[in-house]
Length: 392
Image (cartoon, rainbow, N blue to C red):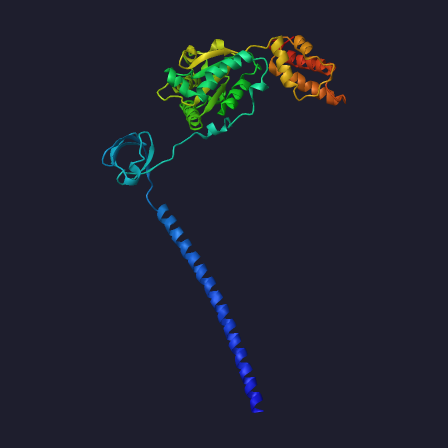
């Protein structure tokens, strides 16, 4: 009996001890959680205090470095145009360069930081293609133009050392002129592909801005971006929008266009070399361009991209119909002969329209009738646009 009670008492004590051990384990786990939470709160407190201290600091002034002097000093011009001789923080001094924007202490005007370089975000809105997928094989009938472009654009970008060894400066710019739709943009993209260059496509009218100095700044940032992405090709389409002959400007808008043109001329023939950057421009109105654009040192080569002749039209049609299912009755030489006066863009429109007609009519391939009907439709469209668009 006594032995049985002793056993029950021992079991009860063991059960109580186990229960205490479980409670202790739970308390330790809870303590670990609280310690972890406390650590996170302390870390958050330090971050918030640091942020608070930063926000309550007095604001810094913005200035521009005019000159960097020995002994951790610099000449700086503040936003009001006043020039000061100031001290420079030792951690900033080695990276300081004239022309940089810097942060100045309000109390001492000391340079305490370098601001990142500003870049007009509108430059990023231009068509920037890291490497276009257009090749010379995609262009028909312009062998002579392609050969000249390879010499004056492709060779300087791919083998600049050849020009250095010869002791001559490579051409800086090429102007392509000719009727619309003759392949000027395709040529520029193909050159960029062959040189593995970044292609920056700009329309001349995009460089025209409303406020004084904005257009010139956009041109500076455009060339700066091109230098950063070198080798690169800047293609300025419809350059006549900013490159027309300068006259006695009577309006603020005309004067702003002229400022933009002057900046373009300065970038092409200024003190900073265009290493790894080629400029190709295109226009339909070479007769109205300012002579300063056409002189050597800017657009060194002026290349005509004419309307294709019969042989060139045949080559273009072969390129356009490479992947197109044509009926055996279609004779591309005959089509090339009867499309006199058509541009490459016209021929592309004819092939596309012929394909649409073939699909509409349930044909398995494009027939000669589809092509002739497409020609008539495209011709009617051009008649409606005006006599300058008519071919045939």
